[in-house]
Image (cartoon, rainbow, N blue to C red; front, side, top):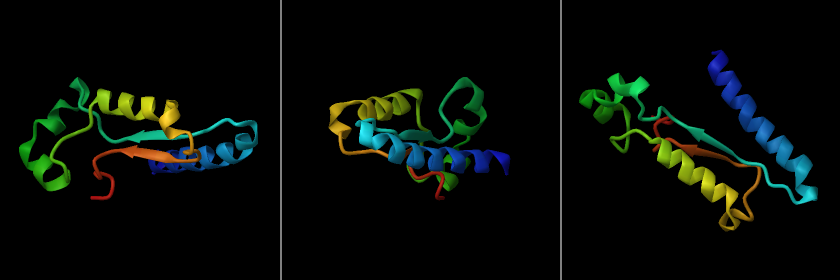
Length: 95
């Protein structure tokens, strides 16, 4: 439960901080990744049954996926995005 509460806190902190800093032309967003494909999660992503049953896209996010989302939010392409929590999870958290 503490893990879930802390994630919800980050989402709300993102929104409140964006509201406070918006008048100063500062955008605030967060990136919320799911389980990333790393050596530490090898047991999960090598389990074919888990991937097919639990993950809508049938794959885990990689570190590069998180970097790409972060780079987008840092770029001018996201100039009108603030107060958002961007899930990089392939819809895994909903499943």
